[in-house]
Length: 478
Ligand SMILES: Cc1ncc(COP(=O)(O)O)c(C=O)c1O
Image (cartoon, rainbow, N blue to C red; front, side, top):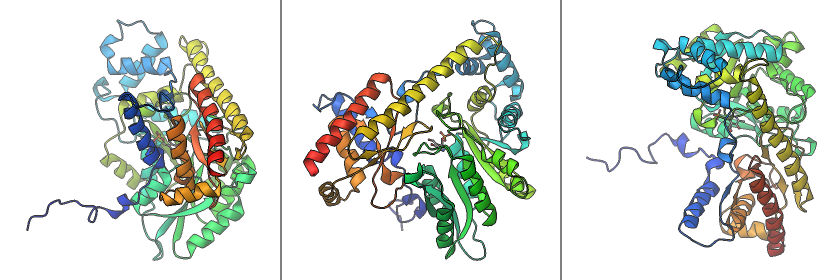
């Protein structure tokens, strides 16, 4: 008998049907549809859609770092090295990287963990950052952090003592985690960040989460996102020590998503690796996976897909298995690895590219500082909005009050109140943000996440749009 389709929604891996990723979800789909309608001349109360749904700085107009792009261009076309006018340190960098590529070509596969030269530079960077030894052998390059986060989470897909595995993740969280756990069939154990204490991470809440999940699961790992996405909070060192002690006492593997470590405007970033080291035995011997990406920080090269995990103190047979699994995927893109090389070792004072690099980096940081301050202030002047101070990342995650009549209207449409709010915001102002449901929030509270790095005029428009829209929304539904 011939089937119509071999693959159907009934017989595909059912885990795929459970994946949700609101950052590119229904509101964003509707935004794309609106863009097409505007192109066709449909009249709207606005003339363009403002995409504030995704942390993609180049998509918001941030200019690439010149040094990075010059290295990339010449790494891709080495025959131009002697004919184009670029600073000498660019030429030197290209020579070094290509010297480590098979046949001097970025078109050749690299080792599955990444080029040796790049992993060595990563190790040097980490060592300088933390004052703790780092080894290139513990570094695995990936096609963005998402790639290596998934690869690490895959290692926990195994029942222990007859119980299914679970992973603790913060709420709110970046939905790469919930989506990947769904895909891998891993149970998600939610611990809530404390909004009333600047999104701090309470050990009592970690304990509650662990206890409840342990009834029918074996909790194997704890994910911490620091600086937070969507919250923008930077954990205090004391808070991090509490987390480390908790993970140790409960025998949990710590996954530290530290991708926003260069996007901080206030507070000091401490890596979990450094904190564990400084806490001494037994914490300094704990296993740890820490993630970094070129999609964030000042490089923000999201589209070129480059990041890494530092996987420390894992059993030898575990790293060997991880290595083999990475090998099956060949290697992350070598051009992406070139970017990582530049990020880990940017031009330093005295080098020909330094002045321009420093200027470009300063500007990027100024924009982040200005936008976080303005977003924080603006949101806290809108009645019914509240927003914690934003220490970093590139987002704001304000809390919004949604009147009960609007909640009823949402229910009639089969939507959550925050989805309804974001959809109305999009339809009336063209501003596309992501509802809090996509990141998780305490039941009964409502939020949205907005990117804040738009060009100045667009950013002003957004801030005005939030105010105006909320005012009208309250008029309509109070
Ligand atoms: C907290 C966090 N982790 C990981 C990632 C993955 O980034 P990429 O795969 O582009 O490196 C992102 C992207 O937005 C993120 O916000």
